[in-house]
Image 1 (cartoon, rainbow, N blue to C red):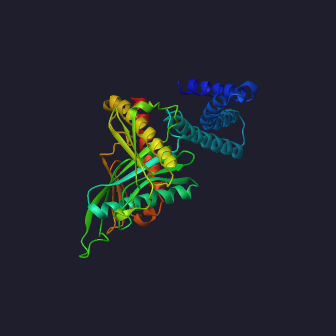
Image 2 (image 1 turned 90 degrees about the vertical axis):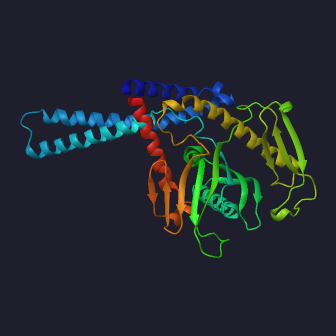
Image 3 (image 1 turned 90 degrees about the horizontal axis):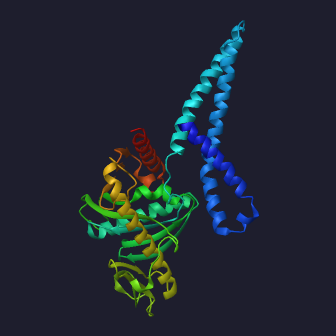
Length: 358
């Protein structure tokens, strides 16, 4: 069954490779882009399949040698070692191929919009929202990804009641989609003179950035208002009405953007956020329809679920979905997220493999 599928993948890979050299396809940018995306997705599967096939051929060769009579002891031991080594490779490559063949999330290669909102805990939750934003932007920077602030509602102490920013980079959504949910912090707040530990929360939403063609918005469904942008503490930072508020009338969804001095740029950014939120709602409806079939899905993006606790006095970070605790709070807050994210990805893959086997 697995190898029938792999033979089909290899055949499709050749077919797509041939199509990409066709002048007619090269001239059609949309078609070329789609085929390139498919070719890129199939490449690691085909390369791993080739490694598997080489290990299988080498194992066969070693087995054939062992079946020969009169083989010297040294050669027999060498052939036995080759056989065992290549059997281990086949087993390892086979497991890797099962993971590579899992249905991929169509959003995995997309850029993302991250929205962080202060939750319970007043000013401390707004400061924690700022800490989370710093953590994600440092992670993005380490991976060579580009970030851009879309909207920010800053507090007097330098925290954020809410902040939205985009992250542009290869596979951004595939890595960050597990971050949606409630993040809880336990620490002595900067605002607390008595030195008592407080618990507060911030909510993170990671949305795939979508193109105009993926979500059609009827201009008649939009109410667009302009107002003066204001900074922390209410002081006006702009004397013109450059800030934009867009209300999507069918659902009452409101998006605001005041980060730019240009009304046009603010509208463009607000529309980008609106498209991503509408796309997420559509996805959530589809996820809800099949949720009962899955025991646990770490990548659902449920914003109401408490997913992680950052305990500063004990220097630990705990991800509640997979029961992982790391005593590396300083490194994690400085953007070293790969160990956490790799564990979440591995867990999600294991759940999907169980589902397929069941």
